Amino acid sequence: MEEFKLSLKNNYELVNEISLQTEEEEYSMFYNYYKKSLEDINYSEISDELLSQMSKSITYDNNRYTFYSDVKKTLETLSKKYKLVILSDNFPSIKRILKDIDIDKYFKSMIISAFYGYRKKDKNFLKF
Image (cartoon, rainbow, N blue to C red; front, side, top):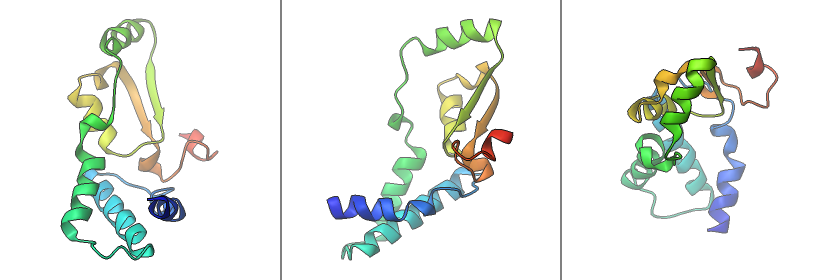
């Protein structure tokens, strides 16, 4: 497992600073990331099914996020007084997830790093 973690870390450039517009692109990016990371450790049981499951899980599984129970009430209250914006290091799927739990409507704008190919720590991302 440690070897796989190191391989993921070494291949992080495959998910870092890449511009993604859709969940399909996000899925494909994670598929390639996991495939390369498993190949690098000579994992012999790489199958399309395994790669697909891993990639689907991280892209399409809403349960990978946990929200506080009072998040809707809090955002509703804040949005009446302030213009709320999300500035996030994240991927296209976050927009669907926020919509699925019905909190996207509280944000005037969502600036998601993957849309621009920058991470928040990059000065260029802050220009948006």
